[in-house]
Image (cartoon, rainbow over all chains, first blue to last red):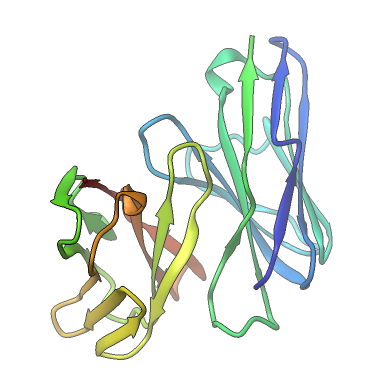
Length: 118
Length: 111
C-alpha cells in the first residue's frame, strides 16, 4: 500500500520558537495533503487541506498565519507552527491522497508527530 | 446535526464475541465510506472501505452500508484483545472534497 512518512516523530521546543513538520508520500504522488491535529482522548480535527502548487485551505478557526503550510511538490508538504505556545502541544497527523491510488478518495495517513511546547 | 455521528462508547465485548460499531451520516449524496482503526498514540489505519449498499466482508471484518437510512456499520467477528482501539468512521463529502470523520467509538475486548 501507499506509504506516508512524517518527520520528526516527536519534538520538544521552547515557547515562542517555530517548529517545522514534514510529510512525504514515499511511493505515490500526493495531489492533495491534509493536516490534522488531535488532542488527548479527542477525535481528529482537520486543520487544512493543501493542493500541490496552490495555497492551503484552512478550516474555520485555524489561524493561517500561525500554521504555515507549504505543498511545494507532489511528494512533500510541510507544516510550520510559528511562535509555538504550550496550548499548541498536540499530535499532528498528515494524510495524503493521490490520483493513482486503487481506492478513490482514500487518504493514507502518516505516523504522526507529537509536539510538546514547554 | 453533526455530519458523521458515532457512539463514543466505550463498547465492551468479551473475547470471541461479535463487536458491532455504528455510524450515521448527514449528506445523502455521499458515495464513499471508510472505517479506520486508531490505537492510542498512533495514527489511523484503514480497515475497510465500502461504496455499494449491502455487506462487504474482509476476514473478520464486515462493513454494512444502507444509503437509504444513511447508515454504515462495522462488524468484527471473533473479537480479540488486540482489536481494542478507537474505530473511526469516515465519509467522503463531495462538496468539500474531503473525508469527514466521526468522533470515534472506543472498543474494549476483554479476555
